[in-house]
Length: 416
Image (cartoon, rainbow, N blue to C red; front, side, top):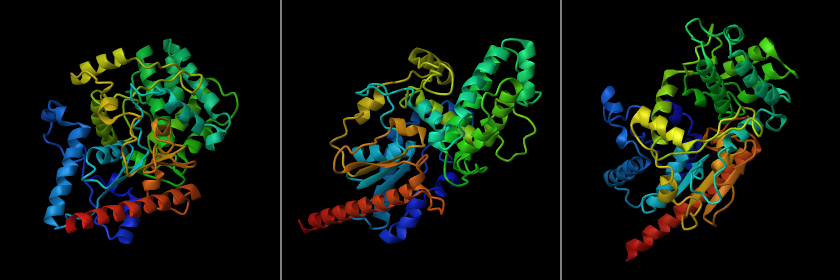
């Protein structure tokens, strides 16, 4: 189990003694060390990487653990954040006899085609943009300057002289080739990714979570990234130098990089996770994403399922199933489910695809106005906003209720 996750599950660690609980961390197949093959053989056998098979792994593990520990009547609560939150909620729906309740933090279960009403494919980018404005605590000029920075990249990227200016202002490494429009587009995408991660990791204290435990982002990193872009009306080299410093909050977290290579992420471990997630996105986790440069601070990037499918075929040899998640898990029609808490922070761009209102008395939503990506699942911190402390307390109340219900049910069955 990767320390990144183990060390960022404070709600579980801090609650275990109160409930007399055994903590079990099961690594998802293919991620970390849980790989069925090694080397190129793994890449040629990706078909076993699915959410359904991962949940079946967990269900079987729990059955074996209960038997080995003679704890067949012990209630089980599932926890997960992000994709893990999706798995926790779906596992409660699919295996209610195995999982007695689920805490699903920042779980974007309504991010798929086929939803009614339809998913807003631009929601993620809109929220990232909000984080870069005073509404998210950032400098007033930041979002506007970023919108102009992409235009500056495109303008200068159209000719050799301009690309030279870009390399100088962005402090690109000599080996970072920048010879055509495609290279400039790749550079822009690389820079854009930094702001997506900074928004997700917009925690109120320094955190290593978004860097896979291999570095530390500052408190409220989006605000930190916006500081070099805080002057109104920045243009030309000054604007791109500001962009260079801003993305350095993420890519140059150590402050030791002499230059940038836009083909590299912040660390290799993150690249492997991203690679495997790309496979899942190309099969069953097809989430439409778009940007338009008007409602967000980026540039026009429409969702194109046909182009996405072509890319998946070329990279992985698979054809996406865009409606599978909605068909398999019910989309917004989850009123028959029970014992699930969906928590979402309003600084987290994934909340645009999450459950923000109660579905029923037992499928409830907790909204954390100052929260980033599943902040409530992290360890308590002196810098935590009151809203996340209240969220954790409410989650524990539901856990007590679910455990009591399950215990009563086991007792009733034992008397028969």
